[in-house]
Length: 220
Image (cartoon, rainbow, N blue to C red; front, side, top):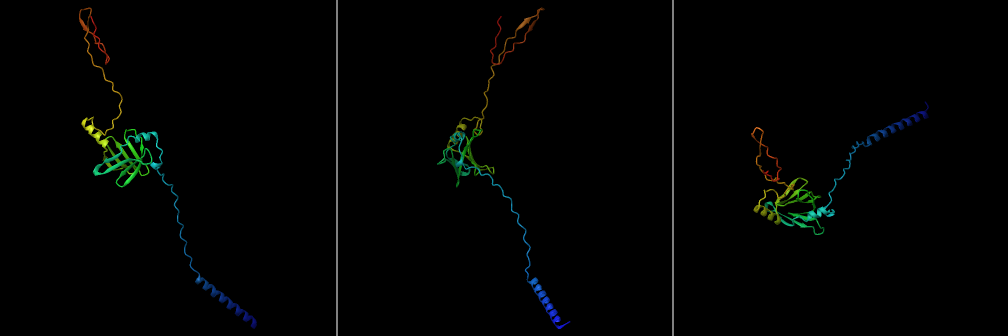
């Protein structure tokens, strides 16, 4: 080989070695890639539970307004020296505010088929139940009585009247029954005898008389 050729080969080898060194350095300095975290599953949206309408926004029916006339207003003395106050709503006719301890529940009357008076706060699940001899405050969502044996002055008057003239006890709600038809007085008739051809007296069966029909005695 000639001298220029050797010089060219030497330069080529030097270039290759330099490129190899740069590549190795680049591999060492390259940052390690971290594994990507798994994508979190987004929960499906849950439809919100229906919210009960507030009593203030409720349009009262004629039956509800009629039931409101039967609500006892004022203080009711309850068990364990507790008090519940029922007052008409200051702005909405037919609604009531029921005050117990430090809470105020706005309630609307609801018609019943039992003769009881029921006030409901559907948004908070509270109910005030009134019968002729007592009232109670209930949490209808958990089925628990908040306070029981509450008596208004009118209910105490009813209890006293029942004690003076007992009618068989009960809670003061008398079921409606149909009319009772009294049976007429029982009557007896004289036995009538007949004489057979041989001269023997044979008693005849007494006539059938319907209840309540006056008996007729045959005349001879």
